[in-house]
Amino acid sequence: MDYHIKDINKAGEGRLRVEWASQGMTVLDAIRERFERDRPLQGMRISACLHITTETANLARALKGGGAEVALCASNPLSTQDDVAAYLVAEEEIPVFAIKGEDSQTYYEHIRRALECGPTVTMDDGADLVSSLHFIALGKWGELNPAVRSWAEGLSRVAREEMVRRIVGGTEETTTGVIRLRSMESSEVLQFPIIAVNDADSKHFFDNRYGTGQSTMDGIIRATNRLIAGSIFVVCGYGWCGKGLAMRARGMGAQVVVTEVDPLKALEAVMDGYQVMPISEATRVGDIFCTVSGDVKVIARDHFRQMKDGAIVANSGHFNVELDLEGLEEISVSKKKVREHVEEHVLEGGRRIYVLGEGRLINLASAEGHPSSVMDMSFSNQALVAEYLASHGHTLEKRVYRVPVEIDRAVAKMKLEAMGVRIDQLTEEQQSYLASWEKGT
Ligand code: ADE
Image (cartoon, rainbow, N blue to C red; front, side, top):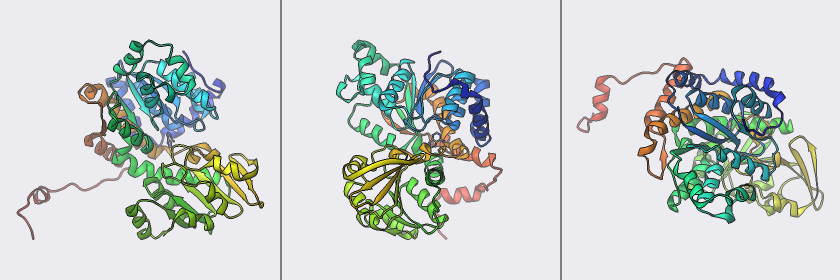
């Protein structure tokens, strides 16, 4: 079996951690047991570009249990848990191409190797796998990373087109990836259907809000060991992730400042009780900054100049573009690592700015990502959507679809059951009341 990981000897540690995570993934576990009986994914080849964590390992087990051949590569150079990669290779016989801290060249080589496995279904977290595949199929050489390009240029046009033709469909895990894929759809280049798992209510209401909220605080605290209480904590972006992060920072005693560009979200933040101001003002008051906006250069070069001595800056959005680190380099007179995941930049005049986790997803770079019980819902959606693609994929067009509502609701229902929470059901009278327009008072 082909694979590329850091150290196969870490498999034992990985197994224990994957088993621990599985205790929080009761819904996915039940799906895996059904999959092992019914084998709905038989014949499917899934290449998945995801964060290689204990939770992803449990998803991979479920998919394999359902009969799929699964290959994994990382969706971020810093998010791989090397012990988990070792466990998957050594004990689950799942090919993994991922090493924590890999450089950009290796990151793309790993994507190439996942593509070489010949997927019929793709899973993405950020759309790097699907976009690479499209650059190959469409011969967009200029866009391709050299690690993929040198391989793809050796393939015939027929072989390259065949790579996308055999794909029944793909799934996308995160907001940033869905935005990229919708742009591919509107530019009419999308070559196969995608199901936007991120957009399921049972995914983003929970994973993006409570998962990002907790794991981002966890990442910042593990990296710095600073007290949050009494600090001024600036959250850039008030989408689902920003809402969760602001809530958790406030819960730990920070004064929270929110920056936004969308008037509705800004108003929501005001009415949720946060101070809202432009980033150019927030930079003068903040102690800790975290971007969760999905956009580029949200904290730009001149913003760093305005920060207080000792300001801490992190990102928990998908890509490492939200902090203008090149701009920061330009205005820095020196730079050094002062502790694991913390780099000190000294500016002219001596002010110090601390950048966490190289500006990459801090919740995965210095912590372990979202806890398993919230990933349970995200990855149950992924598993059920893979099953849906097996039965319905051929009926879909080259578009970005929402998760079927039956799957979305089934995940929420199963999670409640697993948590032992019971809810009411509408009576017949209530159902008919809701269905009728004649009944007023
Ligand atoms: N994204 C955020 N947290 C994650 C986790 N624990 N596993 C996989 N993907 C994630």
